[in-house]
Amino acid sequence: MNRALPVVRLRVPTHEDAFAWHRIFDDPDVMEFHGGASAELSVYEELTARQRRHDAQLGFCLWTMLDESGRVIGFTGAQPWDRDWGPTGEIEIGWRLAREHWGKGYVTAAARQTLERVAAAGLTGVVAMVDARNSRSIAVTRRLGMRLAETFTLPSGPREAHCYRLDL
Ligand SMILES: CC(C)(COP(=O)(O)OP(=O)(O)OC[C@H]1O[C@@H](n2cnc3c(N)ncnc32)[C@H](O)[C@@H]1OP(=O)(O)O)[C@@H](O)C(=O)NCCC(=O)NCCS
Image (cartoon, rainbow, N blue to C red; front, side, top):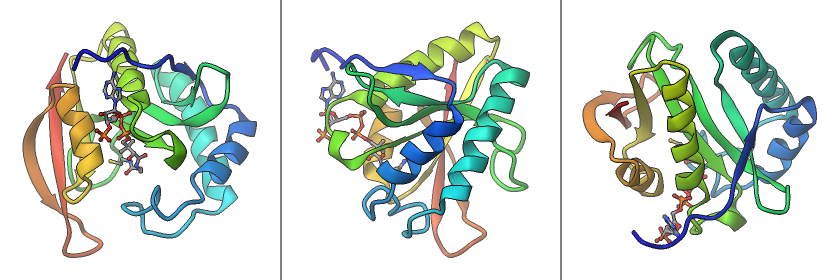
């Protein structure tokens, strides 16, 4: 793709970002592959606090994404996959973007910055776990040059998750 990527800035999530994430992700389209329903504010307060700990301990986290005008539009970054199924112990990259900003390349731009940052932090590879029906997210993995490595059945139900990998 030759189109210029939009400008996007990444920062360690502040406590206030929990309110912004709660507001911009309160959307059935955004939550389609995350249980469908909106998450409580407390979920985002815990999630942003956890990312500040990851940043302090690992040098990377799920960062808040800001557009060219400084508006919070979502998150993209990396964190340990801490569940007891799937790529346990590996580092996953992930993204979530407010609906009004889909279709502009923001996440591809943010994910490229993420890959540069985690490579600089010493990682030699990352995974991305994506619901097999989430074609928009799978398209992001494709734009990043990731390869489908494994398919897992989600413990929560008869659904499949794709594990994409990228060596850095
Ligand atoms: C998954 C998700 C982040 C993808 O968002 P997205 O905007 O499609 O992804 P990107 O930022 O990479 O943008 C790609 C789109 O921008 C367009 N685009 C414009 N300029 C571009 C550029 N320079 N480079 C790449 N894409 C560009 C692409 O054509 C594509 O749009 P299209 O699919 O309509 O053709 C978004 O759908 C989302 O937040 N979903 C809900 C949460 C979620 O499922 N997260 C993933 C969990 S695994």
